[in-house]
Image (tube, rainbow, N blue to C red; front, side, top):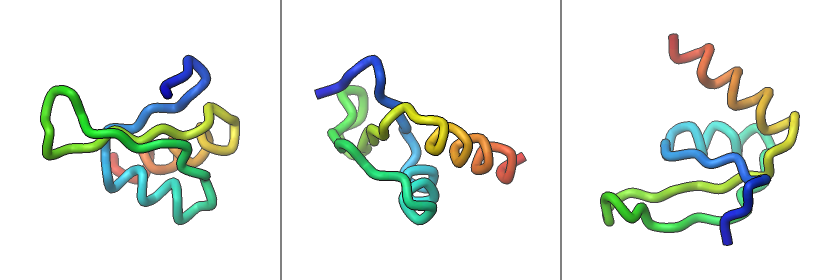
Length: 60
């Protein structure tokens, strides 16, 4: 189940990046908007947020 404390990711590439950095995937569900895509849920921790920011910065 989704919690307000989850970090939600809509990108498979970003989810893979986070997992290779040691972030634990809490849940994965199919997107309600596009059945061919997935939504990835991570714990909303500083560790995940720092790596998410690292990923975003590397994509600029």
